[in-house]
Image 1 (cartoon, rainbow, N blue to C red):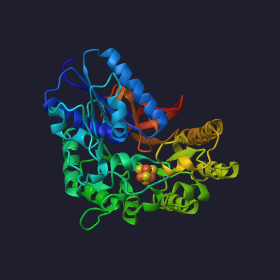
Image 2 (cartoon, rainbow, N blue to C red):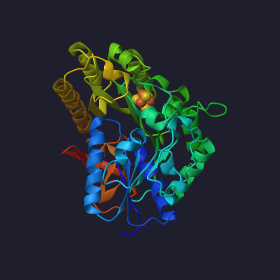
Image 3 (tube, protein in one colour):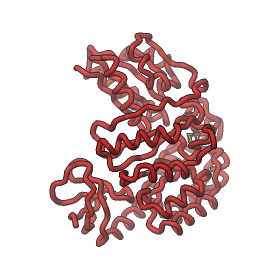
Image 4 (cartoon, rainbow, N blue to C red):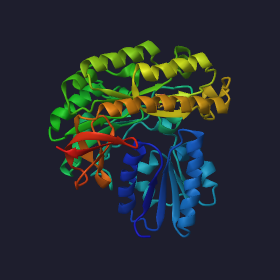
Length: 412
Ligand code: SF4
C-alpha cells in the first residue's frame, strides 16, 4: 500500500471531512495506513464500525490502523482496546495536520471545549460529481435520543467569506453541484458577528458565485427555517427544489418527548408555505419509528404525515438506544414493533415516491451525470439516460420511463 487509505462511514459530513484527512495524511507522508472515519449515530452504526475495523485489519495485516470520527470521540478507550487498532484520534484532532505527524496511541480532547471550526479549503472529491461543503459543526440542541452534541460539540459556523472561497474553488475544479452540510445547518451563523442566517448565506453564495449551477441543502430543522431561505427558494432556481426535513416524528407528544422544537402543525405549515413559494418543491425527511412511549395512535400521526406532506425521500430509522441519552430511561417500545413501524413508514414513502416518479414521465429535467450515465435531477430523483456523457455533465433529459425505481430518458 502506498498512500494512506481513508474509509468513510456514515454521513455526508464525514465524506467532506475525509477529504481533509486524506490531504493531511498525504502531507504527513503516511504510508501503509488505513484511517477509518467512523459514525456513531446508532448502535447499529457502531456495530458496523467494529466490523469495518476488523475487515480493514484482515485486508491490511501490516498496516497502521487509525480510528477516528464520532464513535472514536465518544468511546476512545473501547476502540483503543481493540487488537486491530493502532491509534485513536478525536473528532477535532482528525482535522489537524499535527495529529498525523504524531504517534500517540490516543489523541482525543474534550469536544465541548472546542470553539473554532478551522476553515478547511478543499479542492474537490475523488470520485464524486457533487461536492459537500461543511458550513458549520456541532449542535446546541439536546434532542433526547441524540448523542451527536457530545461527540461534535456546540454549534460553530464558518465565516461566509470562507465558504464562498471554498465553493469558488470547487466550481473552478469543475463541480456543478454543491451540497451544504453540517450537523445542524439551520443554526448556521448564530455564533458569528451579525448572526447571519442560513438564508443569508445561501443568497450571498448564489450571488457571489454565479457560475455554480446547483446548490442543495442537507437536513433542515423545521423549527428554524428562516424567511430569507424561503425567499431564495421562491426566487432562485439554482437552489434545488428539494428540502430534506429533520422531522423525526409527527406526533406532538412524541416530538415533545424527543425535545424537538417544532410541532406537527408547524412542520405542515412550513411545507405548505414552501410549496406555495416553489410549487415543484419535493420533501425528504428523517423519521424515527418506535421512539419510547410511542403508541399506535401516535405512530399513525407520523405515518399520516408522510401522505400529508407527500414525503418522497425518507430516511427511516427504528429507534435505537444510545447510552447516555435521556430517551434510554423512557419506557421502551418493543424492538419488533419498532421494526414493523419502520417498514410501514418506508412502504408508505415508497408508494408516494413511485406515484411521484410516474408523474415525471413526459417531463424534461436537468440531470447531473454521475457514473455510468446515471445521475440525479434537481428533485434528487435518480435518472438513467441513453448515450455517452462524461461524469459531471449537466444534460436536459426527456423522461420516458420508470424502471426499477429509476427514471429513464434521452437527452433533448
Ligand atoms: S438537532 Fe437534535 S438530532 Fe440534530 S444533532 Fe442536534 S441534538 Fe442531534
